[in-house]
Image (cartoon, rainbow, N blue to C red; front, side):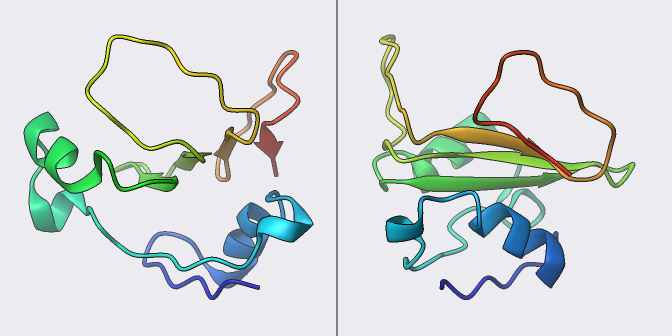
Length: 108
């Protein structure tokens, strides 16, 4: 199982996120390639850090302590095309969330 270190989520929350990955895809290396408070909040900085890096797990914590994010197995790129990713999912860890017909959403 992947080791998950984050200042945003605790170990229990991290396990909930990691357990959503298919069993055969839970062994990977996580790198903190972008942090808004460290790198800046512009879309240009985000794109420079994240585009073309491969699969991405995004964690977001708001000023009101809501924690949410998502995963895509596809690389981010500057394109006007839509892509289909059957492994992608979104999650919301800290507030009430009731998705409709989203079989890949995590509600805790």
